Length: 370
Ligand SMILES: NC(=O)c1ccc[n+]([C@@H]2O[C@H](COP(=O)([O-])OP(=O)(O)OC[C@H]3O[C@@H](n4cnc5c(N)ncnc54)[C@H](O)[C@@H]3O)[C@@H](O)[C@H]2O)c1
Ligand SMILES: C[C@@H](O)[C@H](N)C(=O)O
Image (tube, rainbow, N blue to C red; front, side):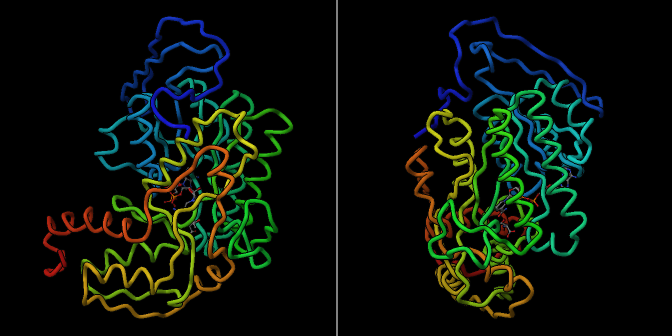
């Protein structure tokens, strides 16, 4: 499997070792960012400087943490259009960056000597349907901008895709990497667009574009941003506060899911894999598939008197078009993808993380089963 600090993040062209260099920049807010990088590689440093767009969402904060542990705190720059919490500012560099501002992105990439762009900015499936023009701007124009910047400055570019990139005409159990993709949400359409544009730039211009189709992501430290799979995280919070979860999907709605630690590890491992190992540029990845009924049963092992009611809303129609089970055999074969969390271990980890948080705020249910 492609992982570990010693992995070659970028293609090694020569063994010429140059002295480390230090770069100091002032952020617009006046904070000083000092980055040092080893010059062991001719084309790229072995500690790449990474810019994450949309990094204040469910995935970006965790990815910045994982990447900073591997590449150095100052080499991973978080960015977003939102104001970060104080602890984010204390943990490493953060900059304002609107992905709709092409010139601003160019400036950032040049001024901070960025090598790799992780493009997380997006409007998710449910929220995208509520503001289609904005979703088109962020999810399509934003992608055009990062593609142009990555091409112009020779960056490695990662844009995640999703199970939502498939639609009612796709095989749903299992859903392979290459099959019919006719999604019917603006989110899905924009993600197919990103996959195809990224692959086009790869074939046409040699851009090192990579994409993983993530399933629904479940995390303990961050909240989901308005997707169709959010219920699978909210059920834990409801169980530990009101013991009552009102699910907006039918009890038998099966969807692919992944715990955030697996998502982040998959992302970094994939980015570190040598191009020679990749038979494609966009891969399905998954860990588990479950229904609301099945996760409720698992959560009840910790909160036995949890009550779950079902009131399907507009998100049911979206979920009904998505894969039930993802086939990620190519990721497993090409670059050694292997999940660590299944439904029981994910639930146990969520409970272990959330119970102390709610206990601190005196909000946990009183009877959590040992
Ligand atoms: N979370 C999931 O379950 C999931 C699953 C599949 C794929 N993905 C993909 O992973 C990526 C990250 O997802 P997430 O869950 O962290 O999303 P999120 O909704 O939690 O966060 C998205 C971030 O993008 C930012 N943003 C919006 N407009 C912007 C703009 N104009 N410029 C810069 N930033 C802007 C928002 O402020 C927000 O912080 C997305 O591309 C998403 O499609 C997520
Ligand atoms: C699946 C994923 O893309 C996101 N969680 C959504 O539901 O929109």
